[in-house]
Amino acid sequence: MKYNVRTLIGLALIAAVVLWNSDNIKDVLVWNEFRKSLNQDQVEELTINLLPDQKIQLDKNEQNELLRLLRDAKFESSNRMNHGSTPDGSLLLQFKDIGISVSYYRGTAGVSSIFELSPRHIDHETQFYIESEALGNFIEAKLPE
Image 1 (tube, rainbow, N blue to C red):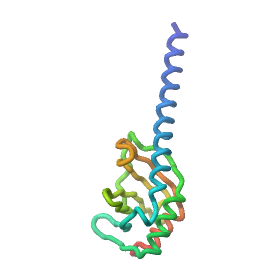
Image 2: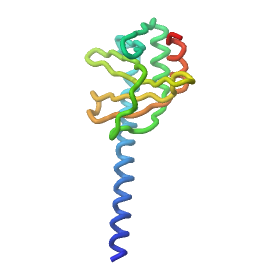
Image 3: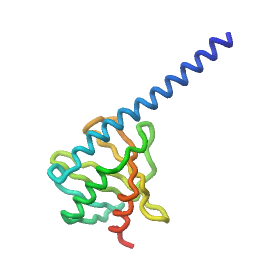
Image 4: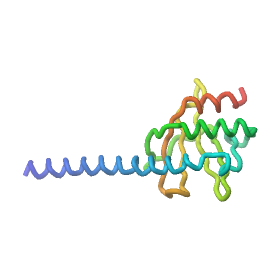
């Protein structure tokens, strides 16, 4: 009987690992598809938003730099099962038919290098974190004191 219980526990652990990896794999693919759309031809407007209602407009050069930094960001991890903490602001990328928000968090050391996004037009269940220290520094420099 012990052997059967151990076998079941082992199978449950394997299934959990496969499911976890499955979400990460799906979200890496979504991230790669989304980052291909991050160019000035497809993004009509890009702003930095501070919660609750402040907006920082960017000129074309700043928008291009921000898009480059987003494209260079690395996939961190999937977050399909949870919602992140309340963000301090977001980047709003306005495409022709949709708007995508990339949330950022700000602590005592400035804007975090971890960002959360959900490009649900690609996959309605997707939600994940990306990482870019350079992107955090760029946003921090644009925010009011």
